[in-house]
Image (cartoon, rainbow, N blue to C red; front, side, top):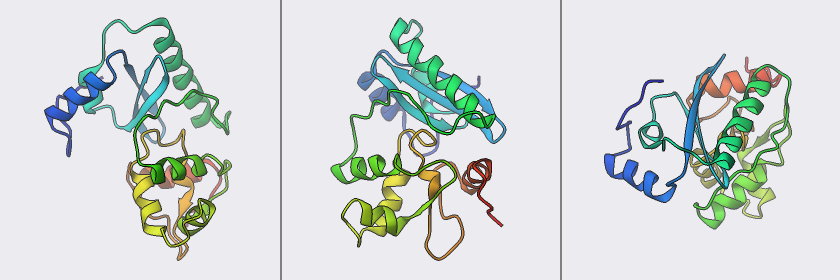
Amino acid sequence: MKTSNRAPGLSPINNLRLASEYPGFSAASLRTPCGDLLIAADDQGVRFVRFGSDSPLAACVHANPSATTEAHLQAALQQLRQYFQGERQAFDLPIAIDHGTTFQRSTWQALRMIEYGKYWTYGEVATYIGRPQATRAIGTACGANPVPILIPCHRVLPAHGGIGGYAGGSRWKQALLELEGFNCT
């Protein structure tokens, strides 16, 4: 796994913040048909999923994770492998999110309601959480999702057509949607 002390948009100070906020986390990379993922977990559950293996998280990994941390990480790797092989449609993992605004957390909770192979528009998510005028803010909350795929922000599409933006890029979003049977053309 290639590691880096810095990634675009994240300074070494942010790396130190990650390491100090999550002192017992461990991470592993997973090669998928869509590209590499970096998954990080600690004793509370899965903390982050990042696109690509060159992430500032890789520079902060602790060498001796606890048995609980390792179990969370291995479960995430196994379930993600199953998902990419078409053998899993829902994740049964502890997800540890202790940051984000109330609005973001409400959005992320709503996203978990979107079933495999289905999609909601940004407006439908906004209406679901009781904020029908907050369509753009839903997109921002999706972009801040710390565990994409596990919380399926790729299943949120613009009402006007197309697939919209995605933290991992449009190639990732299209590949995930197609994996779930959505015709992107």
